[in-house]
Image 1 (cartoon, rainbow, N blue to C red):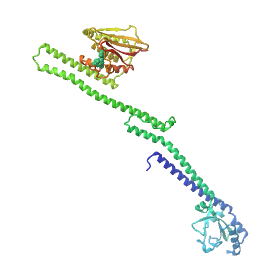
Image 2 (image 1 turned 90 degrees about the vertical axis):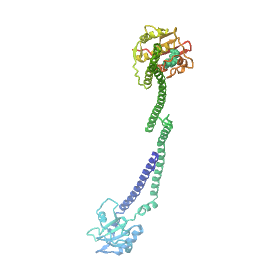
Image 3 (image 1 turned 30 degrees about the vertical axis):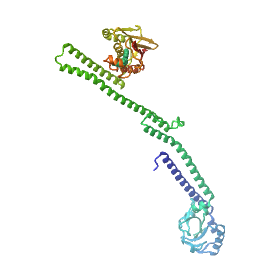
Image 4 (image 1 turned 180 degrees about the vertical axis):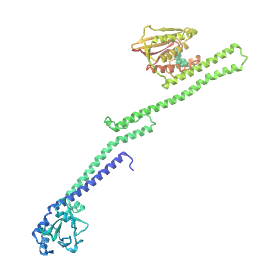
Length: 491
Ligand code: ADP
């Protein structure tokens, strides 16, 4: 069983060509034979009439042997392939130019003779050949006498020479052999051209199959390009199929990578969450159990235990809230609704919110921007969240006596927000990692237990959702500046 399209097309084409060729040759041979029969009968249609008109062949129903033998001799000398018969009114053979004993049949069917005598023009009309009952031959015939009531018939079968049978035609006719050779050569030539054409047409299909297989073997990674580029741009169906496969393969590859990445991320997240929740939960449980067990604790100590338990539960709440928010941002579930708003007003609101905390810590909270700034176009809720994260960090990592300043500068079509502090700063080796989830510098890990390590990761994603990026400049021991820009609203 042929399995490839190329093989099937080739087999089908060759089969059709050879079948068509076979029928064509049969048709040529058959029509050739019929044409020669027709020509022979037309040429000799009057021969019987001419003989009857000149000779007295039957006299009172009796054969005139004398004149017949002359006719036999003359005719056979001119054309040895013809045979002459004298028939009675019913077709029985009374005399013949060949020995009567050598004949296989003693009579001839009258129906073709009547059609011939009736002047039918649809030549060739085939009559019996008494020498060979299986064969039919063209003939010439005439009633004897021509005028008056007939007494019998002159029946002459005409030889067809080399056209008598197909095999004889093939061996005898140079033209027939030449025609068949021409037909066969044509078929072979067309088959060869067809084969080359199919090879060329199916080549890209074969290459595309290899490409698909390679893509499957390669775990649906980047598709390999094998299909010939020289055919590109022809825009035929194979070309379109190749283009579509390539696009689909790229999309599948990207999705597979995305799935793998998100799977790794999910595993990391689960590990981290379980680790991060376990620590504050265990401490919380420890303090609560101690409180429950020690009924005789001094008031001061009880308060201390309760404060710590509350701090751990706050951290837990913050951690869960941050994780939830980050997961939503990563999953693309956070809706981004940009609208024009006053950035300076938003910052003043936030500063007011953190005033008390700053005061408690002994950190000065400053703002530095003009009162006539244009509106920005951004998601106000998300920007507020990002700014609060930065401000909370600045206050967190700045000791008493230090300051935190939020400023806005205008650069062409953007407003640049800077949150600057005079705090602990970030060491050079920590800077590349501070936006990673859960990353906390060694220094902060030791001195500021409250953080979750998620605030900057959330802030970075929020700014990226606005199509912008967040930057940081910091010197350990001197302070840090976090900055990002937002587009000015054109409305
Ligand atoms: P968290 O503050 O909860 O630890 P963040 O993601 O907000 O988590 O910050 C990650 C880390 O970046 C912090 O642990 C800290 O080491 C460093 N960091 C962030 N902001 C500042 C800042 N203003 N000054 C110094 N270090 C900072």
